[in-house]
Image 1 (cartoon, helix red, strand yellow):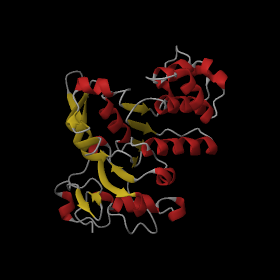
Image 2 (cartoon, rainbow, N blue to C red):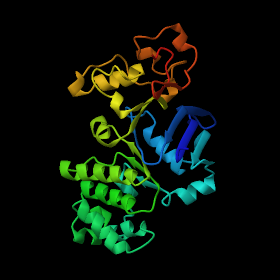
Image 3 (cartoon, rainbow, N blue to C red):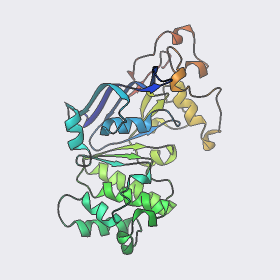
Image 4 (cartoon, helix red, strand yellow):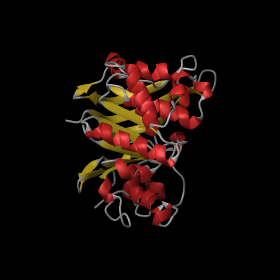
Length: 307
């Protein structure tokens, strides 16, 4: 049983277009993903594909105008709002993309120690700071006194010394030098190897491939493929979805090959397959209905042409 499972998640936002008129903008539709104990699942895709919104939905920190359907389960139990509040920061730790999540009025050492629920919190904080090359004096600084890279290392430290079973890491490494980045990724791998689990949200496919077990590919607010890391190789021939293959071939080392068009905006989603207007294999059937996720060759894919 997955420790975390998201089933048919859809999210829309209510927005006013005039004083008395509202519109619903669908930003995530029929999204499915599961996270196993001992696993790192990397979530990749272009900006606006729904990666961060998924994290916020799991944690229950979406804005008040969000409308949510579908199920999110932790350890086999569907998460209610009250359960979400109990899990957040306890069983599920979050490394946010923005460093503004740090409390501006609290010294960073104290903030990190706050997440350590058992044992010597001061020793644990200093040990993790040393690992990420943060000098002891940093613990007495306020967030505004940190560089961007130092702030990200502080957020990472907060999650790493927690007693959480799951870490959701949203772009945790930008601004880090290569040595610290390698150490940060290594610590996430160690966290999962202890029997816990990591959801790594990232644009950096190369880094994800070094530590992840599976890759979930997002496009226009839904999952189009979930594949083992080993399938991201060669010319992408082991991948199942046309977008996954295009994403792989777009990397500089794989030819830097562009594709036509752009990812659609939430207020102008096409009917049927969301990738259809950009896909060379699309036909009239692709425009009828969005395909379901199906199992194929040890992975999952949302495409009627996948083989």
